[in-house]
Length: 305
Ligand code: A3P
Image 1 (tube, rainbow, N blue to C red):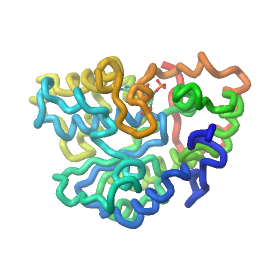
Image 2: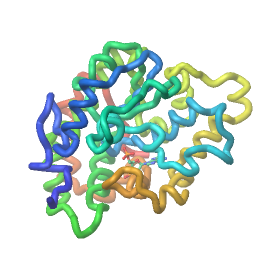
Image 3: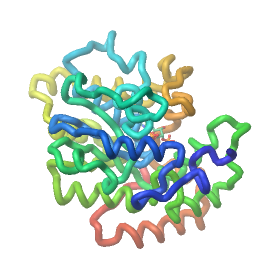
């Protein structure tokens, strides 16, 4: 199919969001069988909001005493492998039977693109922690556009950027509507701050050290003064930087997700690249929607660096 699971008939409206039909079965299996533990850490994002970055950062925070800069798993594995998606990888119907997750030593690190509402009760109801990374919709949209058009050129979407924006604004895109996705986790983070930490891509870019401290505290392993002095935070930030990860062989030539080359997860990583791709009328349409959906919620995003 031309649309490759991002738009139109390749999506199925399920429990309030547009689920790529090809993973619907996985989603249901995940909902029915996942047993959350209090020590679990779940990374949640809307696609193209910084998932890959968040995975590298939180994995590195949690495992910082286990590896050196010479033998760090990020040097040879794509970040998605280190914090697998529950609905794409862990509960893939292509795996044989159900996964045995009982032997993974705590804290187990998983990820999801699902909105908050459809998460299984064992995640919502347990003490496991959720870290959500949100990003301004202008850059998220452009990143999504670049991502889908960066796939095998022979399978290009037969859709213009204007049409793609129409789908984005209406919510008819993978894991959309965008607005409800972000707001769902935002509200939960306000109501249950020990359960959901809401991190913004733009804040991480602007003040990585401060955000790293928030992340580490939240997942239960804050940085000690000694670590602070020794530059541990800076080293993790450097290891996980786009410029570093992008140049690693595994991310240049590898393929962890069956349908996506690793290199497609790394592009520019800037705040404000949307100015190079959106015309004034497109910006106006996103402005309108932002106003309509986010007004009164207290949620704001920077959109320029
Ligand atoms: P751009 O397309 O704007 O460059 P996701 O990981 O959710 O798929 O999001 C991909 C976006 O995050 C892309 O944005 C990508 O370049 C950016 N990204 C990937 N790794 C990053 C990193 N280590 N640091 C900052 N941004 C990163």
